[in-house]
Image (cartoon, rainbow, N blue to C red; front, side, top):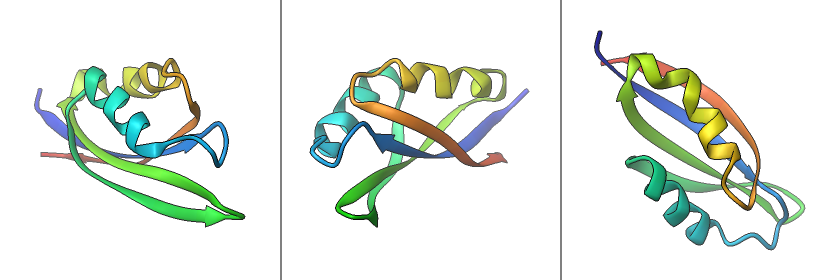
Length: 82
């Protein structure tokens, strides 16, 4: 058993969602190693984050993030064993 680095793309519910506040809410549930805001289209932006978690917790990450107000969709982009 080891740790994994998980890269996630988080889509907000609307273009008006404050992604910095959303990042703060996410950081209350898990430790964010890196983050950036990426433009998608028509003013919509996605929050991309990198978290490091034990490999047994990777399935729970998306469901934990979807519980946060303002999160519409969560997509796991990559998982890397450390």
